[in-house]
Length: 422
Image (cartoon, rainbow, N blue to C red; front, side):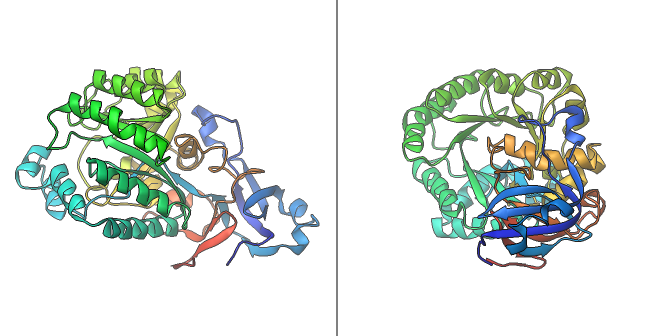
C-alpha cells in the first residue's frame, strides 16, 4: 500500500496516545498512557492530524474521504522505539552461549576462542554487502514485531574503514522500512592492533569524529565505561571532546560491576546511559535529578547470565527509564520489544503501562526523537501498531506471541499479520 492523502484508523477499543508532558515520563507519569476508549486516528500524508473518540473523528469531512482501517475491538498504540541495538554484529555464538549457561566467565570463553574478539574478527571478515544483508534482515524482524524506529551502533570493526562503512550502511538502510538512528561506538573496546586505550581514544577524537561529523554519518557517539572498556576519566575526556565537536552523547555503564558510569554520563550531559545492571540508590537519585535517560536492556540476559537492572528502584526514585532490546546477533537473542516488555514485567517488577511508556515515548527521548515519534499526537509521524488484542496488558501476558496485526510507518502499513508488505 502506498501513502494516501487520508488514512483513518477507526474504532480502537483502546487507543494508547501516550500524549503528555514534553519531557520523558517519570514516576507515576509512566503509567499514564493517555488511553482513549473507542478511539480513532486520522492521518494525512504520513502525519497524525486528528486523534480522539471515534464519534468525533469519524464525523470530520476529511474522514469521509479517507481510506479506512477498522481496528474494532483492538489496541492501537505508537510503534516501538528501540534505543539500543547492534544491528551489525556476528553470527550467534552457540558455544559461548552454552558455556555461559554452564557458568563460564568471559575469560574462560575468550580462552576457548569466543567472546568479543572472535565476533570482531568475524565481522571484519564479512564483506560490506554481507553486513548490510544481515542488518536488513534484522530490521524486517524488528518491523514484524512492531518496532518502527531503531538505534544502531557501530563498534564491531574498530578500524577507520570498517566503522565508516558500518555507519554508511545504517544511513543506506534508514527509511527503507524503519527509521535508523546511527551511533558511532568506536569507543566500545580497544582493538588489538592499537598501542593502548589513551592512544586509541586520541586517534578517534583527532581522526574519526571530524570525518563522521563532516559526512553527517551519525548524530550520537557512545563509550563503554567499565573494566572491558575505558576508565571514568578517559570517558569524561572523550565525551567532552565529542560534545565540543557537536555530537550527542551516550554511555554504556555497569554491565559487569558497579562503576562511575552514571556519574560520568550525567556530568557529561549524555542523552542516555545504558544497561545499568549494577546501578544503586545513589545512581537512581542522580538520574532523577538529570535529563539523562536510563536505557535498560534486560533482554540481553536471555542470552547470558548476569544481574538484573534495578528498574523498580530507578522508577521509584524518579529516573526516566527506557526499555530496549540490546539486540546483538552474537550475544543478545531478541529483536522483539514485546518479549522485552514481558521480561521487564516478570523480572524487573515493572507494570505493563510503565513498560509501554519505556518502550515508546521514553525510547524516543533516548534518541532525541520525541518530537517526531513515540506518541500519537497531532503533527507527529504516523508510526502506529494495531494489536491483535483487546487490552494493552496482553503485551506482557502472552509471552512469546507476536500480537502485532499491522505495523504502520509514516501512514503506510508495512506489515500485516505474517508478512512485511513493502
